[in-house]
Length: 170
Ligand SMILES: [Fe+2]
Ligand SMILES: [Fe+2]
Image 1 (cartoon, helix red, strand yellow):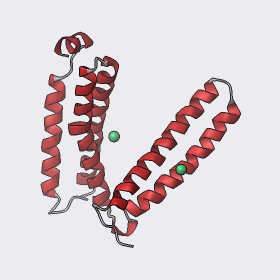
Image 2: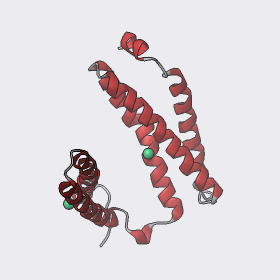
Image 3: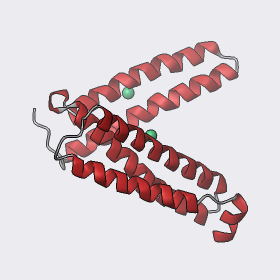
């Protein structure tokens, strides 16, 4: 079966993958809470179901990223692109909204996780270089990723503000 980006089914696979992945993490979190609340049986039920949700998410991934089309180089590229999207677009946008809504707890969390996404992008980029996974064509991407990461580093140095400073700039 061919993999056609831009189709409604491709979009639905993405949503279904997101939903199943969220269910997995949510049930693991619920298991932790149920255990803290002293209900081991329900904790185990959530853990078992979480495991099945991983299977469901993987089934969608098989269709989104057909293994026959993948190389280590592509895996690293997809991962770097995703982490850069989080650090450059997703978290800064979420941070801005949280600041506008006075959710300083969320501002701090989005900043922190945006930084961690940049670290992950860097770890994957260094791994790609180490394993020479980035070939000639991909050197272009490597340079682009490095520039994007430098930009993040510079802006995060500037944006390391205390909650008081955040309140003033809100
Ligand atoms: Fe499911
Ligand atoms: Fe990450």
